[in-house]
Image 1: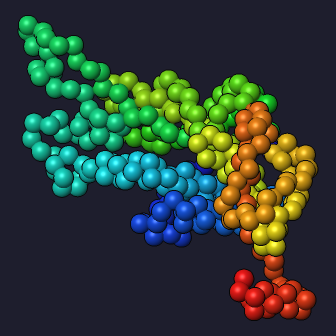
Image 2: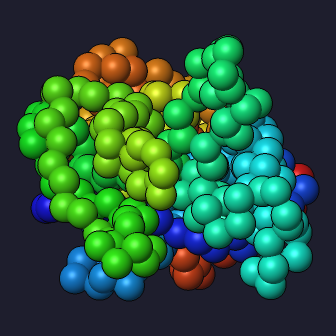
Image 3: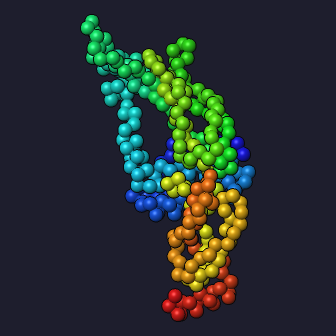
Length: 305
């Protein structure tokens, strides 16, 4: 399975189908439902479902926790900010460098003013060189690929200056070597692979590793969490349920009597790259009920359960 790198410009709250004031639990429930629906393991050979799954993953990473939502909010209010002068592209304010300043903002800031930065006859503070913006890109791998490590290709789209001085967006095919067991969400800076600047240096590419946790799993603070569907009777009375671990091995999990949806059992060393794995109980979707099941539930209802 080849690695993939994708990016979504859609609003993450819209992708997950939740309100902007939704909390962690509501966002997590929406993510789990959509991830289960569109996971490639359940939609083999369907590229649209795979793209939707990646979009859902990215949205959860952006707003799945209070810290992530705050970061998303800061980015939303600290973006491009418009062209010089705040009046669109029609006219440049005097004394700001005109078209050079416009290109500078497009490519990540402009060179500092000469006199203000010590370019006068007596010199002064050494100026900070103009530099293009960094480019952030995801490298998507499976658990198996990330655990094994290796060399993986990906694509970066960046702004370049053509020979005639025109601004153009070009895709570059790059390759990066990762050590085995690299952490989900870790990043690598590739020098000089970002946007060019019209009068300065080139920015970097920030490659963020995103590891597909697999069906019924998600990442929380670098640890794998796997949902385990448990019938209501087993939650109440206790028992055992079958589970398939990330390494493909099957086992039986003991569920204590009186367990609740959301309770967890931790398995040391059975997660990604020898890390821990949290098994989280969720209520089994029983589907269409048989007459016997309806009768049993009716009796439970009559008994106050």
